[in-house]
Length: 223
Image (tube, rainbow, N blue to C red; front, top):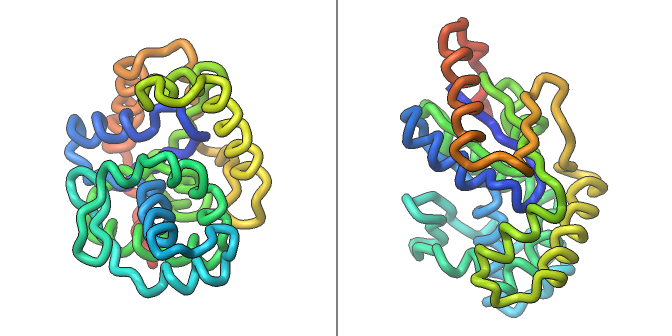
């Protein structure tokens, strides 16, 4: 089974997907962490994140895999590095590269092959796993998303700055040429602005249970 969750930044996709993975016995895939790992790497190498040709060239040399808390990049386990402020500020640019997205999508499909997975990101239902058995679009208001991210950062960044970053990320995610964030016609739309994480998880788990009683659509782990 493949469960795919799309939605803008700060909607709680990662938390929901992780909890649902544990409850439903699914392998958890955070697509955003792949882009964050590549972003962290190029910054470490002194590569300009706006130089998409150089970024793509660097990404293609990397060996990427997952571990329980993040990404394994060339044998190095990354966790906190993925949430550094510099990564937050540059990941949108890196993820706008068509070549980088193609590379990451290949990694996601490779890792999901022969596994029951729940994958979350921006284009999981529309590009990476269009044949997913369950498609979810998790949304929330800009204000609620900004406050969640503000709390996640331990109030180390001013709320207005966090709000502005998310608004800018929304603009990039919904207008970029490749991997644009959009609602799949058959996705279950959930507005989490006034829902608890547990309530969202219950909705997603119910959708998974319903899908498990139907014949599998298959083909969701194709390369």
